[in-house]
Length: 128
Length: 414
Image (cartoon, rainbow over all chains, first blue to last red):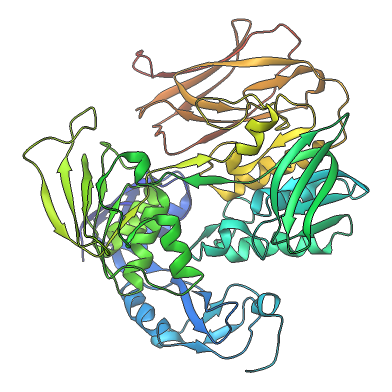
């Protein structure tokens, strides 16, 4: 595990330049404008997390691809695996915003959810 | 029927403006695409709404919140797949001509809210030499292809420019299985938000090359490669530093320009710095009843502020009768919006957005009225890509001199 990390906080648009230094069992964080920066830097030092956002294919011609994201953060190391998985998924009905496209995506324990109301775009609710 | 306001553009700015108009007033939104949402539709990444909703939303989720409100409002009519061809000022109202599946129509509105966004600067506009084969596109076009049409336009690409859309697309194409060889930026510092450098480039090990640019595009039908070179302080390529990079796409993310063809035709006065109209604190341009909001006014970093600014305009529709404006003077700023203040209709606080002219260390913003300091704020560092927002309480009257000065703390000019 890294003893010292210089990074940019991604929690909000401020983009604080953070420095995290491990001192025994404690991680000291500086450069943060708010407490969320501390939580972020600690996670970066121990188990970095990210949200995944992307698209999956659908059978609807009005919407050949549909925006999706993970319902919460997942291990950063899993992002590319989730990306590869999304390239295999095909949605065959019109999902509502927030509906689960795939539970426990790539064994992360986090669901992949649709982020737009497909029914409003495709004008249909039944399976094709 | 005559509308109280006609809103041109159904993106985040137009929707927020329309929803802020009093429910007793009729509003028409004109949108050229098939559905509302504007560019947010193709922004599948998250980070939207942190300020407004306290949540990290994706673009479509942020847009949906407003789309639902628009359709729930009885006073708002929406016309999609409708394109504005011209606007004429009549006696006390505006006549908007449109073309759509319904043919050529005209609509009358007492007020106009211009919310038609911005456009991307193209490869031509940054003087790249060589051919114009398939595979040469703007970052927004690549985003549209990948996120809306489901087509990946690049297997191995180079990105020119470190604007946010370019950074976002570097990550997006990587996630789609493409190889992003590097981001080349002619300036000495990146143009995008800091957090996007981290989460879009560094997270994936994509190199960022500063003070380097693309000088030549190779390939006849399809991009086969690009030549990159170091640039000097004047951003001119240095002979002898050229390097050939084989690739199948060049994606350019070299800036956004507010779209104001309609505004200029109407005779609205423009600000050379923002490249958008000059407005007062209600986003009203120099033409009575014509408002400019969102990225048509100035290019925003965050959609949260686009919504805020647009609501200010929407609320103002039909409210003011007389106005008297003073200019907002400034020094050390890249730009400031609003550029003038209606002193007859001051609210308790007035919100300003500004960008620093150049990168600074510790800096101080001082606001004076007739030479007397009324407000100051210290910053630990400022970068031109990151706009700042300040809300100031001031009493102003016609003839007052209002001035914003930004100086670096070491005493030198910022």
